[in-house]
Image 1 (cartoon, rainbow, N blue to C red):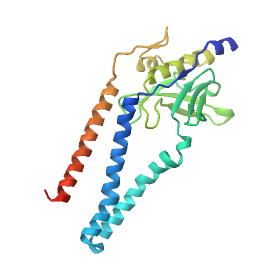
Image 2: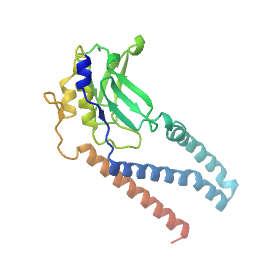
Image 3: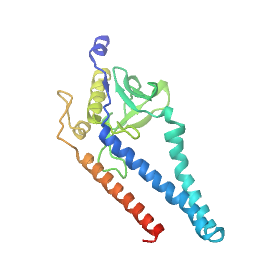
Image 4: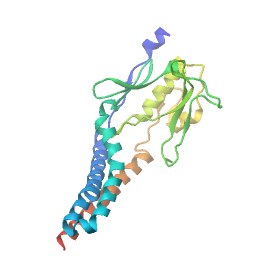
Length: 237
């Protein structure tokens, strides 16, 4: 096993900064538009029409806003030190690191457990996501209860360029360090992995990538359109 560990290379996530910039632009545009419409909008309404007519509406908007903004602030600001921004796969398993190069999450090969299904490692498609499947595994960390977990090679507000390569490297590691576990051939096919070479058969931009780009363009267009309408309404043009 020591020789296998030495031969197994370390693979790190690669960020597509152009797509990441688009994702962050859309995120902050949506967040800014939401803040303008549901926080500043009611304030302007109270200023324009008075407390009597607008206070109930303002209170409803602010209450709704808190339900949305509190989880966002908590996840992206308060708990940002616990948010992963880098993925590394080595001879120990799958490791998630934060901006301070600290491990915030991990899936170790030694923690993997057999499942009660036809295969121990397989893919699932979450409800509402028909584009990219997720890898599902069974874990028993530190002799605790057996649980199932879905592996997503995405990072919050980052576009990971080599997701399929990371899946391929992790699955290759399973065959080396946990040969007792079985991998569903469909899992390899889902990520276009050649089981003989463990290489990914890249075929240009994926369908999911094009759909993401189209979604970004549509969302940006809608936001700019709403902003323009609000400006025209405010100025009376």
